[in-house]
Length: 454
Ligand code: GDP
Image 1: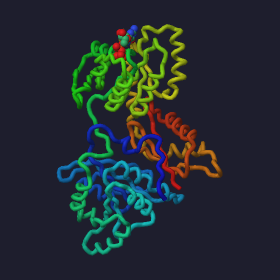
Image 2: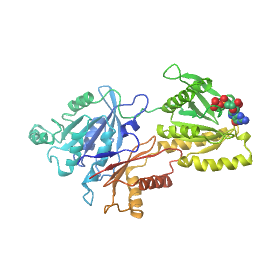
Image 3: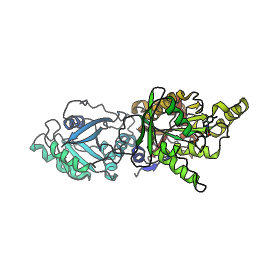
Image 4: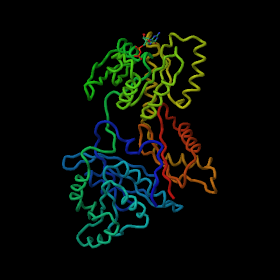
């Protein structure tokens, strides 16, 4: 019954991770009617969460900010699960599984009076296999008489049951003390919330016009704060206003400092690009339209894709282009950049300032795509429609089915499909294509991971 992980990209945890620190994440999982929402309300100290659980796997994860003993944390309520109408046990725990992966610690809630049911089984197995700290919470232990019920819960193999009454608050303080011991100071899985101007990496081969573009923008528009020191002494950012919007261009010192290394220049340039991408949210890849699109250009585009950042393509030195070159460039773009046909394109001149303001809608669109979250219900309606119209072809007498899907993260949008077998690469590409047709995802890579259930 082991889950086999088929990842096209990184592990989910890596994708959700980022620079800086985020609050630790506590996930609360459990079936409907075990009193999960009451516990969430009790922990949050208010009656904000909906206390009526809606059964069904498609309810979304709901995120709250909690605090105990002066330590803030993120609380994720996962919605309950029950086998769906067709009794698909394989799919029912999917939501909980994703939530556990994106959490630093987990509370598994059962109804002490009812005990663990058959539909808890799959989740219990998954929880026993995870390396995340898990505590078993036996709810509805309203007074000492009900403590007799919790004995048999030891049999779940999740350690000592923590008896609580979410309704009356009994045992909850002790449980929260324990939660504080389970949670790391900073999340190992969540991305930090970052405020301020959005971070742009300006990348491209030498001489495509990166420093000219910075100079032109900084001259024509106001430099809000220049030379804002980054985390280390070397990378220096600049906040630059373009057409009324402030952007934080990362590692501009690296662009401005002309290093003429005869040996290893490419290597250092690619390290620099890598470092800039790590700190950025969106990359502008600059091309010199007077030059043919080269392998070096494409390598840089592929570095952006691998980094998972959103992407804008800027064709510079447009003041020098003639009709013939322009036609040829169109063909080159079609051939060499077909894999990023979803990226916004702008034709600019860093020299004259032509169309620099068009970078703003392009960057905005790319970041919007990158930030997109599709609610689980909508996503599964999309999957249902897609698989009804285009079922996976039969392979060796078997037909892999998609049981359930969920968006595990954004930045970039990352989806997990729970399937009954390996999906053909063509079929996976088809799903990605349809996702783009339906939801746009302008300017962002998307990641579709699969989990095969035997
Ligand atoms: P970087 O290495 O990418 O930072 O490129 P630079 O900004 O140093 O530009 C390289 C050369 O291209 C310089 O001589 C610039 O003046 C020139 N250049 C940059 N942008 C343009 C442009 O839009 N039009 C023209 N005609 N020349 C440009």
